[in-house]
Image 1 (cartoon, rainbow, N blue to C red):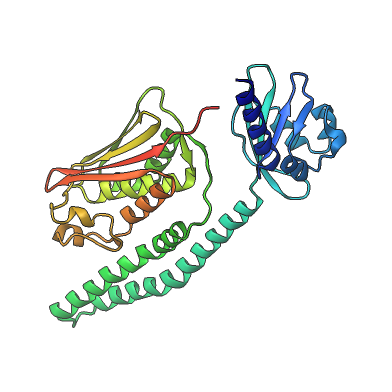
Image 2 (tube, helix red, strand yellow):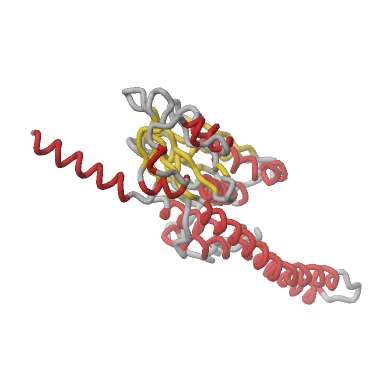
Length: 339
């Protein structure tokens, strides 16, 4: 038994010393009990820092000091004087000490900024000429001498251009997710993500005179992942549910625990999928040949993007549907580990 304890302590010490994440141990008196090499490098702490009060160590970093004194939670990023951004995760141990994980998210922020700039640039470069094409087609269709056949062709041009317009940003996002670019891994309140996604589509629901009902099970566990990406995934599924159902219908969204996972279920009473089409639901750029679907502008990328995001989170996504009976999409996500 003693040998096992010694081996376990040695393993923990190895992880402590070599982890890329900074680790701080704060005693009950608010003094630095220990820190690993990664934390020393991130926070510029020398050997003499051990045993010093946090108030003295970080006197010139008030934002960091305030974050270190937070209650048990994953705090917002803190910007240091050298413009590096850190994210802190804190937990209290049974003996009254506090364990703090320190992650350098500077590179992540730069990557996110680059992605946003790329999306804006691609959207600008693609959408501007497509928007012009839509405008010219619309103008040409008003020509008094245009034949019915010419008007029909121009309307087709408009529909195709609208499809390209909606695809521009989504394709960039999909490529970004599938390329393996970093995502955050932190506790996410799924109820907040779902509410935000529903709010994003409030105008669409109002325009269609449709309703979105939300149902959250008591004691809902936090999911582990990237809140912005999960909002995007839920939003893509919810948007499909709204636009491919008759106006005035209701879309139901519920979230609940399932073991050590959290699931979000989006259910509509829309057109539904034919049995032969269901296996193609997550294929990129695929859309049903149903004339009602074809009449609605879209690029066939929403479910593909949602699936890519969920899979990157180590989760899974499933779909059930039948013609005229609606569609149910389930997103299953790993729950965050408890502290």
